[in-house]
Each structure stands twice: as C-alpha cells, then as structure tokens.
Image 1 (cartoon, rainbow, N blue to C red):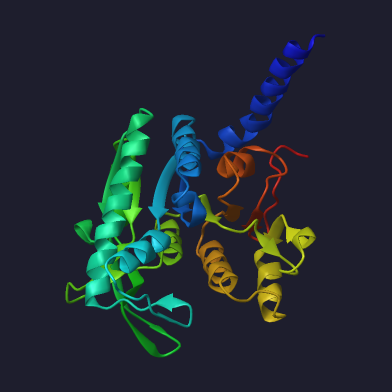
Image 2 (image 1 turned 45 degrees about the vertical axis):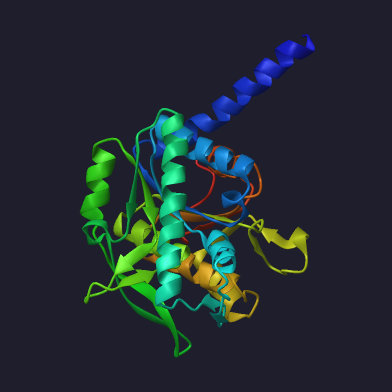
Length: 299
C-alpha cells in the first residue's frame, strides 16, 4: 500500500471513530462557552467557528455564549480608564458597563459574520433581548463590584424558537435586573445558566488551560475524566483553587441540574472541540454524572 493511500485510510478511520458520537448527539443541544486566547487570535477564532459550524452541520444544536474580557480590558485602557478588580472580578461602574456592552456587541456580530461566511444561519442576541437573561446584583465576598449580575432566570423559549428555525444562536452575556438596569454577566455563569435551562446534553468551556489538574504545578497530572463525586472531593481537599474553582463549581452545578456532561478544553489547541467530542480519548477534562461513562462505543 502506498503512502497516499494510507493517508486516505487514516482519514476514513477518523470519520468512523466519530460516527458513534454523531449518532449519540444528533439533534442534541450543546452549549459552547467561548473565551480566552481563542477569541483574540484570529486563526484560532476561525477554527473554533469552523468546529461549531461543523457540529451544526452534522446534526448538533449548538449555542455559543461568548466572553470578551481581554477585549474589554484593551478598550478600557484605550480610553484612559484603569481596570479595577476585587477578588478576581472586574468592578463595572456605569461608564465601564457602557464600554463593555459596546465591545461585547462588536464581538458578537463579528462571530455572527464568521458563522454566516461558512453557510450557516446565525443570529446574535444580547441577554437583554426578550429578557433572555434576568439578573440580580452580584457581590464579590460581600463587596460591591458595580453592574455585575448573577443570572436568576433564562427565557429558554427564545432559544428553543431559534433552534427550531435552524439558527445558531450567539449570545452576548449582558442582562437586565427587575428595574431594567443593564448588568454584565460572567460568561461562564451565563453559559452554565443557559445549559441548565436548555437541559443541554453538553456544556463546553474553552479556556487557556489544558483542563483540570490534580496538581496545578504538574502538567502530567491532567485528569481526562472526572465524576461529580470526584470533583467535589478535589474541591473539598483543596486541590482546586484560583480561577478554576468557580469554573469547577459551575460544572458541578450544571451536571447536578441535568446537563449530561461538561468539558473543560484548551481553546489554544486548534479544533479542540472536535478532538474532545469526536475522538475516544479526547484532549481536555470531561466531567460527568457518577452513573455515566465516557466511551459510548464500548472501548
């Protein structure tokens, strides 16, 4: 067998490996939280959008929830403002909120444009539209951090309608409180709330790390599969800290609220979504219910 023919056969094997996953998740909802370096690197951005578009075209029902923290910080610096953080959370005063909403809207429409360029119908919406995301004021360990909100309700009917009409929704994490004030929402929190409300089959977080480590200082301790019970134990034993702690708590909450499984992926790896979802071994950390197992094809 010549080298060219072997390359074709290898490609066929990849497609066959993906088949059980395509069958399993056909017509299922998957929420992708898109953020980190993959949003500022144009090549990575294009590949992430290719991944999500492919998921759509093979029968998934993807929803993108995007962040924009790095871009917001860049614009805050551009206009001469100084970013302020308390307990790791951005303090968002009225002026910063106005700027954040502008930047997030710009990011939103750029993602819509990328998806549309690949032949899939996308629609970008703010959490304010149709009161998709209702919020209450969020505090950081009791400290006031301004116009930052916790999601109290998701108007899931809007998203079900868009999915039914074959759109790919791309959501800007901004919401309204009971007095119609505008609040910025942490994109992880927004994605988690939406995944729970939609009873999503999967929730995927694109981050700037490989996944969950038993020892954050040792990359060889990457955990590829983690049950909710094991996640609780890692948190309780103090292995999870810093910025990973709220992310893990979001994952646990999502699983316990009915999301089938959650993936934490390194968005800096090209096509990380496809590698995690369509291959047997995956590349990130999959968090699942205690009663589930990772390999659907019997391996």
